[in-house]
Image (cartoon, rainbow, N blue to C red; front, side, top):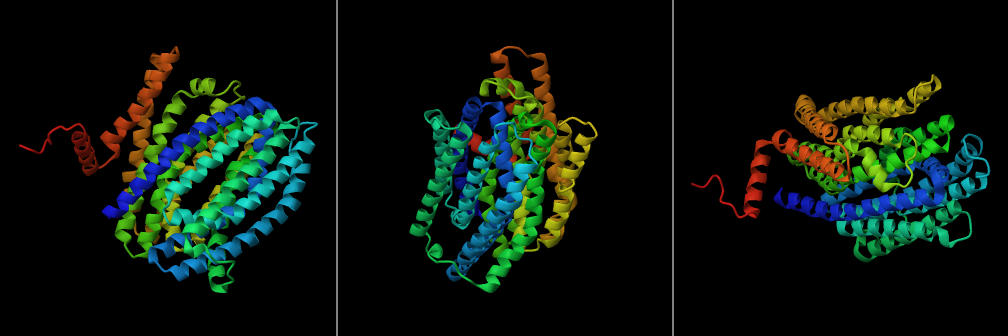
Length: 511
């Protein structure tokens, strides 16, 4: 257990250094991109890219399936089984890539040409961007098994390096836009494809060099292929639901309000991803351990990791989300030259939903480790899919665009409770203890920290220094509430002991 926790801590630290760099670069890249493309084209970029990601929801299901089986076989330490899983996953992703290309060039292309609200004169640029985005997605699909192998082997330094390289190349792409006389939107799409291709090529070369299990060609193993496709088949419904809740929402907003609100949602999604990176880095390091513990039969340790991981995931999101919610306008004024309409409202609502969804990754990994995913994914997807028709109906009857995100918040709350009930049956966690002892305590921490920070913001507003101070107070409020309410007595004592050791103070337990 100590070795496992040490590995999780080491990998988490590596991923957080990667996260700090990538978040800063991504935010600066978005600022430059919005400035160079303008609000309308920036919204168009997010809209068309969203259509491609919506078509690619099949790949998201395959990704989680491949990751699960590679993590599981890594836990059993059978090299031959690893080769079988990897070879079968290569074949499966090739088939999925072909299917997505066919869907993209038929249904997806028809939708872009006939249904989207595209500004006059930007039709050709939209088609170019769509085609380039589709090709980029195809390349990404083919290399998913290699990326999953890096994570399964817990080589988080390489995973971090690949991410840093990709965001750095995207920044270069934005900087180079003005160097070309061609349409900026089309040029950026071409440069993004080149950046994606180079990163994926480096990933493949590294895996071939260091992981013997990937030195195989496509393997046709009917049993293994059926397992992969069956597992991903049930994941498919959940990933469709997620795609509709995110990219589908972009399309609905476009149909009613045009590309300007797509720009606002694009900015909100950028902030959302930056915040979620804080928890994604932690769960990237934690999730393989959850699956490996299940594979080795250590259910007790697996349950501890679920409780611990769920709480820490929420607190990590809170540390960033709550200060941004309090000082959204101040942050956007620093970040962007021009703030799109409703961006402030969208950011605040989407971050509230991110707090609720912060438990999802750990819980989904735990359920996936058991292999019993049919009813889990079907139930969650049916609930999640309600977001789209409800949002469309609200807009149709005259409600504001922010009503779509409020709907998502309510659905996320309900989905979270359903996840707990499934884990209670599959891995034996106590549903009541989890809802009140984990989720309830987490929400209490967030409410108290937000209340204190908001009061400070309300009574000490005005000026750059006071806004910065308000951000610091928001962060300290979260940390204090986590320390006082959000952690166990043993964890609190351990933190005190570590702090005293660092400060070279004598232990309180010593006489």
